[in-house]
Length: 413
DNA sequence: CGAGATTCATGTGAAGTATACCTTTAGGCTTAA
DNA sequence: AAGCCTAAAGGTATACTTCACATGAATCTCGTA
Image (cartoon, rainbow, N blue to C red; front, side):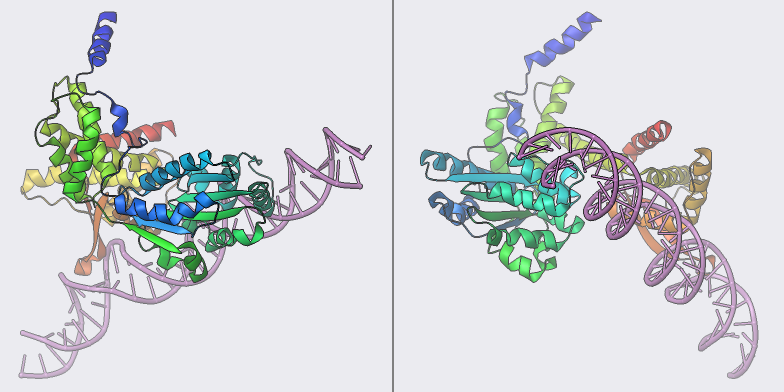
């Protein structure tokens, strides 16, 4: 046993593939950010007045995921902070908050609490009136003369959960502050986000706007090449590996994060396989793995009733496929609402869970369609009634795994 | 034979209900004067 | 007495149910050729 373990550890220790994997991790902050020079310059020139201790315009960044928004703003703020520390005339703080994090995003209270914590204060987790937390926030900010840049990432999430009012209050903060000046940098991957905003908020929040376009395949390749240099040992990458990663990611609206993940996972797969090179096939595998993990994560996080409905769908369509092969040979793998609901009812009884109404299950099915796990179409069979035709949209090789996940979560519940 | 009515099985919308989670508030406990 | 905390009271969003009506093509009905 020990020897086997030793072997595993040793082969892992040899580390044939990677030199420094951390460079591919999402947290990693590279020295250079290719193809974002324009944007970085713009951010720089907009935020530059903070160096003289002046308030800047509020700034708004948009672009899809993985287009370097967060990276760029962090890059600029690092540089700014370094410069400012040299001349001690005033104080500059740049706080970054990701509004999408679960513990933060729910309520106004929590966001404020989180901000206060970042600024060095503390509030009880509950019990205080929101207004009190709000004034505490102002008090902390205003306690000394300073300049605050507030970076709110994924700001669109807050508006969905809370309301326009919160942002409105934020934009008006300056009028309530005497010593401190504050400016807000909003980041959103939803391009239409601004349109949904209250016009008052909109005009003050987006005094300046910068758009981050998606990377194309060539640019992705360059990014990958730059990073890959430090990550992998010499010559472990098969020709075309980088190009393929870039091509895959370019298909997904030019998501650089996706490209980096692909490369990293492909490397990990090669390593686990004991291969000396990262071959092209590992990229396909990595792509599958990412896709699979994404879907399985979704399934995992779904509530129990949703899982039961999905389980019914998977079970029925598997059975359907088998039957149709035996009889006719044609692939008629679609199933209908009624079948699903009946099977689902039995499933609930077996597991001693309450049975939801058909109305609700209908909505649940629709939601799975929106998640892209199934495809749904309303058809009419004439006198046979009207119903949804349901088809699974996930590849067959993860069905088994999906079922296992659901079974697991059922037996624990 | 064909136009229009009927029908089936469920889609879909509105409105109501239960539940969980939040905020607010009142009352009790602690602390400082 | 003032301030702080907590438990209960009051609000609100969410998940679901109930009720009611909408759908759309196969099928039926019945008048007509």
